[in-house]
Length: 200
Image (cartoon, rainbow, N blue to C red; front, side):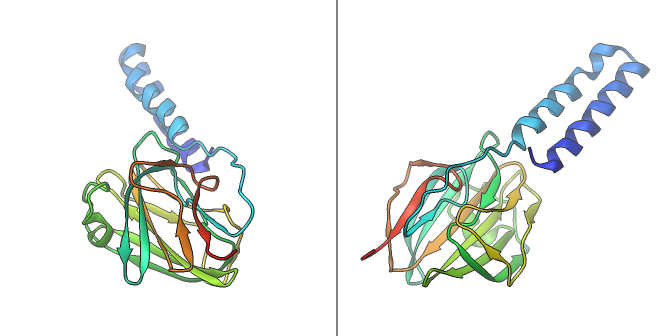
């Protein structure tokens, strides 16, 4: 479990105990339920990382778009509140850029969220390619967390960050990649193959 979830759960549990002590024990129950949800939401399961010339999904969720953008193909993944929200690097390499952008908090499944919402853009270069992915805040998500910095080396499927409470992740893959998913597919961070290198 992500440590942040433990802090939330402990705070909510303490609040429930305090309310129960000041009033009636049963009145603390809603906070206990929220504490249990935080433990569930911030789960961080291990994943089997595929080998070979592939790019893996940076997020759990549903593919809501596969379309051309700026000479690449954009794959957009929508995460609801029941998905694992830990983000992973799609390829092995070195982080060359991390760029945060303030923005709106539209529903993350909407197409305009890709450009207008608060987001963190990350570039990873390695294995003879460059992949860009964006952590995008949603209607409920108001905090983007990224553990790495420019110059850091990352492995394929390595944990790199987190978006809290519903969000979106976009990944841009150049023409050297053959896309393996389509709109409507469910994917899992680190273990689902989004694309394979052509002629490999």
